[in-house]
Length: 221
Image 1 (cartoon, rainbow, N blue to C red):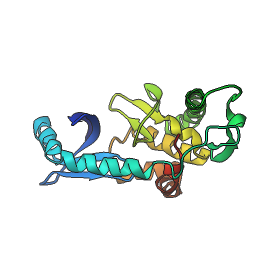
Image 2: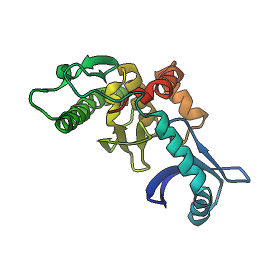
Image 3: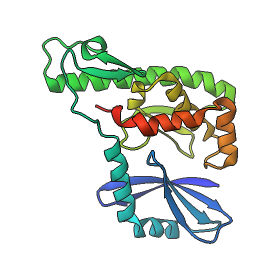
Protein backbone atom coordinates (compact mmCIF):
# COMPACT_ATOMS: atom_id res chain seq x y z
CA UNK A 1 0.00 0.00 0.00
CA UNK A 2 1.21 3.50 -0.81
CA UNK A 3 -0.07 6.97 0.10
CA UNK A 4 0.98 10.50 -0.73
CA UNK A 5 1.55 12.99 2.10
CA UNK A 6 2.76 16.58 2.45
CA UNK A 7 4.83 18.37 5.07
CA UNK A 8 6.12 21.89 5.63
CA UNK A 9 9.90 21.97 5.89
CA UNK A 10 11.16 25.48 6.43
CA UNK A 11 9.42 27.59 3.79
CA UNK A 12 8.86 24.67 1.43
CA UNK A 13 5.98 22.23 1.06
CA UNK A 14 7.40 18.78 0.36
CA UNK A 15 5.35 15.94 -1.11
CA UNK A 16 6.37 12.35 -0.50
CA UNK A 17 5.09 8.83 -0.98
CA UNK A 18 4.66 6.55 2.00
CA UNK A 19 5.18 2.88 1.20
CA UNK A 20 3.98 0.36 3.79
CA UNK A 21 5.44 -3.12 3.93
CA UNK A 22 6.82 -5.95 6.06
CA UNK A 23 9.93 -4.15 7.27
CA UNK A 24 11.25 -3.25 10.71
CA UNK A 25 12.69 0.21 10.17
CA UNK A 26 11.75 3.46 8.47
CA UNK A 27 13.88 4.51 5.52
CA UNK A 28 13.76 7.63 3.33
CA UNK A 29 14.84 7.48 -0.30
CA UNK A 30 15.16 10.32 -2.83
CA UNK A 31 15.79 9.41 -6.46
CA UNK A 32 17.50 11.53 -9.13
CA UNK A 33 14.22 13.16 -10.17
CA UNK A 34 13.39 14.33 -6.64
CA UNK A 35 10.80 11.66 -5.86
CA UNK A 36 10.75 11.08 -2.09
CA UNK A 37 9.67 7.66 -0.84
CA UNK A 38 9.34 6.92 2.87
CA UNK A 39 9.29 3.17 3.46
CA UNK A 40 7.67 2.21 6.78
CA UNK A 41 6.50 -0.92 8.61
CA UNK A 42 2.85 -1.89 8.21
CA UNK A 43 0.63 -0.13 10.75
CA UNK A 44 2.91 2.90 11.21
CA UNK A 45 0.83 5.93 12.19
CA UNK A 46 0.82 9.18 10.19
CA UNK A 47 2.30 10.97 13.21
CA UNK A 48 5.31 8.65 13.31
CA UNK A 49 5.82 9.07 9.56
CA UNK A 50 5.67 12.87 9.78
CA UNK A 51 8.07 12.93 12.72
CA UNK A 52 10.55 10.75 10.83
CA UNK A 53 10.48 13.12 7.86
CA UNK A 54 10.82 16.17 10.13
CA UNK A 55 13.80 14.57 11.86
CA UNK A 56 15.59 14.31 8.50
CA UNK A 57 14.20 17.61 7.22
CA UNK A 58 17.49 19.42 6.74
CA UNK A 59 19.08 16.49 4.93
CA UNK A 60 16.04 16.20 2.64
CA UNK A 61 16.07 19.91 1.80
CA UNK A 62 19.80 19.79 1.13
CA UNK A 63 19.43 16.87 -1.26
CA UNK A 64 16.43 18.46 -3.00
CA UNK A 65 18.43 21.64 -3.45
CA UNK A 66 21.29 19.65 -4.97
CA UNK A 67 18.88 18.02 -7.43
CA UNK A 68 17.52 21.43 -8.39
CA UNK A 69 21.01 22.78 -9.03
CA UNK A 70 21.80 19.91 -11.39
CA UNK A 71 18.79 21.02 -13.43
CA UNK A 72 19.93 24.60 -13.79
CA UNK A 73 20.80 25.68 -17.30
CA UNK A 74 24.49 25.31 -18.15
CA UNK A 75 24.51 28.85 -19.53
CA UNK A 76 22.39 31.97 -19.49
CA UNK A 77 19.54 31.84 -21.99
CA UNK A 78 19.63 34.43 -24.74
CA UNK A 79 16.18 35.95 -25.14
CA UNK A 80 16.62 37.31 -28.65
CA UNK A 81 15.68 36.23 -32.17
CA UNK A 82 18.75 34.04 -32.57
CA UNK A 83 18.58 32.53 -29.07
CA UNK A 84 18.07 28.77 -29.18
CA UNK A 85 15.50 26.85 -27.13
CA UNK A 86 14.46 23.21 -26.99
CA UNK A 87 11.06 22.07 -28.20
CA UNK A 88 10.17 18.37 -28.47
CA UNK A 89 13.83 17.40 -28.43
CA UNK A 90 15.10 19.84 -31.04
CA UNK A 91 16.62 23.31 -30.81
CA UNK A 92 14.78 26.22 -32.43
CA UNK A 93 15.52 29.90 -32.67
CA UNK A 94 13.28 31.91 -30.39
CA UNK A 95 11.47 33.61 -33.28
CA UNK A 96 10.52 30.17 -34.63
CA UNK A 97 8.59 29.42 -31.45
CA UNK A 98 6.98 32.75 -30.54
CA UNK A 99 6.49 36.25 -31.90
CA UNK A 100 9.49 38.35 -30.85
CA UNK A 101 8.93 41.72 -32.54
CA UNK A 102 9.15 44.74 -30.22
CA UNK A 103 9.00 42.65 -27.04
CA UNK A 104 11.12 43.17 -23.94
CA UNK A 105 13.11 40.32 -22.38
CA UNK A 106 10.50 39.89 -19.65
CA UNK A 107 7.72 39.74 -22.23
CA UNK A 108 9.67 37.17 -24.24
CA UNK A 109 10.18 35.02 -21.14
CA UNK A 110 6.48 35.27 -20.31
CA UNK A 111 5.34 34.36 -23.82
CA UNK A 112 7.84 31.52 -24.15
CA UNK A 113 6.69 29.94 -20.90
CA UNK A 114 3.08 30.28 -22.08
CA UNK A 115 4.07 28.59 -25.35
CA UNK A 116 5.59 25.66 -23.45
CA UNK A 117 2.55 25.30 -21.19
CA UNK A 118 0.18 25.18 -24.17
CA UNK A 119 2.44 22.84 -26.13
CA UNK A 120 2.82 20.49 -23.17
CA UNK A 121 -0.95 20.46 -22.57
CA UNK A 122 -1.60 19.52 -26.20
CA UNK A 123 1.08 16.82 -26.40
CA UNK A 124 0.23 15.26 -23.03
CA UNK A 125 -3.46 15.09 -23.97
CA UNK A 126 -2.59 13.33 -27.22
CA UNK A 127 -0.25 10.81 -25.58
CA UNK A 128 -2.62 10.14 -22.67
CA UNK A 129 -5.33 9.09 -25.13
CA UNK A 130 -2.99 6.56 -26.69
CA UNK A 131 -1.61 4.97 -23.54
CA UNK A 132 -4.68 5.01 -21.30
CA UNK A 133 -6.31 2.70 -23.85
CA UNK A 134 -3.35 0.33 -23.79
CA UNK A 135 -3.18 0.35 -19.99
CA UNK A 136 -6.98 0.34 -19.55
CA UNK A 137 -6.90 3.19 -17.03
CA UNK A 138 -8.32 6.69 -16.93
CA UNK A 139 -7.05 9.59 -14.80
CA UNK A 140 -9.54 11.78 -12.97
CA UNK A 141 -7.79 15.02 -13.90
CA UNK A 142 -4.72 16.09 -15.87
CA UNK A 143 -2.90 19.32 -15.07
CA UNK A 144 0.19 21.02 -16.47
CA UNK A 145 2.24 22.62 -13.69
CA UNK A 146 5.58 24.24 -12.94
CA UNK A 147 7.75 22.04 -10.75
CA UNK A 148 11.31 22.36 -9.53
CA UNK A 149 12.03 18.65 -9.23
CA UNK A 150 9.26 16.43 -10.62
CA UNK A 151 8.43 15.59 -14.23
CA UNK A 152 5.08 14.10 -13.27
CA UNK A 153 2.99 13.02 -10.30
CA UNK A 154 0.00 10.78 -9.61
CA UNK A 155 -2.11 11.28 -6.50
CA UNK A 156 -4.14 8.64 -4.68
CA UNK A 157 -7.21 10.40 -6.14
CA UNK A 158 -6.02 9.58 -9.67
CA UNK A 159 -5.05 13.17 -10.41
CA UNK A 160 -2.06 13.50 -12.72
CA UNK A 161 0.27 16.47 -13.09
CA UNK A 162 3.00 17.02 -15.68
CA UNK A 163 5.83 19.52 -15.68
CA UNK A 164 5.48 22.07 -18.49
CA UNK A 165 9.19 21.65 -19.24
CA UNK A 166 8.42 18.23 -20.72
CA UNK A 167 7.50 20.16 -23.89
CA UNK A 168 11.26 20.51 -24.36
CA UNK A 169 11.84 16.73 -24.35
CA UNK A 170 11.67 14.28 -27.28
CA UNK A 171 8.27 12.62 -27.75
CA UNK A 172 9.55 9.20 -26.63
CA UNK A 173 10.75 10.71 -23.34
CA UNK A 174 7.38 12.41 -22.84
CA UNK A 175 5.77 9.05 -23.54
CA UNK A 176 7.83 7.49 -20.77
CA UNK A 177 6.63 10.04 -18.19
CA UNK A 178 3.03 9.60 -19.36
CA UNK A 179 3.27 5.80 -19.14
CA UNK A 180 4.99 6.06 -15.75
CA UNK A 181 2.23 8.17 -14.23
CA UNK A 182 -0.59 6.18 -15.85
CA UNK A 183 0.87 2.98 -14.38
CA UNK A 184 0.67 4.62 -10.96
CA UNK A 185 -3.10 4.61 -11.31
CA UNK A 186 -2.98 0.88 -10.59
CA UNK A 187 0.40 0.61 -8.82
CA UNK A 188 1.02 3.54 -6.48
CA UNK A 189 4.46 2.31 -5.43
CA UNK A 190 7.56 1.45 -7.43
CA UNK A 191 7.52 -2.28 -6.81
CA UNK A 192 8.36 -4.98 -9.32
CA UNK A 193 4.79 -5.19 -10.61
CA UNK A 194 4.87 -1.46 -11.37
CA UNK A 195 8.09 -1.66 -13.37
CA UNK A 196 6.89 -4.79 -15.17
CA UNK A 197 3.80 -2.85 -16.21
CA UNK A 198 5.87 0.09 -17.43
CA UNK A 199 8.20 -2.29 -19.28
CA UNK A 200 5.30 -4.07 -20.96
CA UNK A 201 4.51 -0.83 -22.79
CA UNK A 202 8.03 0.63 -23.06
CA UNK A 203 10.75 -2.04 -22.73
CA UNK A 204 13.57 0.55 -22.98
CA UNK A 205 12.16 2.86 -20.29
CA UNK A 206 15.51 2.95 -18.46
CA UNK A 207 17.01 4.82 -21.41
CA UNK A 208 14.35 7.51 -21.01
CA UNK A 209 15.05 7.78 -17.29
CA UNK A 210 18.73 8.20 -18.04
CA UNK A 211 17.95 10.88 -20.62
CA UNK A 212 16.03 12.94 -18.06
CA UNK A 213 18.79 12.50 -15.51
CA UNK A 214 21.51 13.47 -17.98
CA UNK A 215 19.87 16.19 -20.05
CA UNK A 216 17.12 17.48 -17.76
CA UNK A 217 19.39 20.35 -16.74
CA UNK A 218 19.16 21.77 -20.27
CA UNK A 219 15.36 21.64 -20.24
CA UNK A 220 14.74 24.90 -18.45
CA UNK A 221 14.12 28.60 -19.01
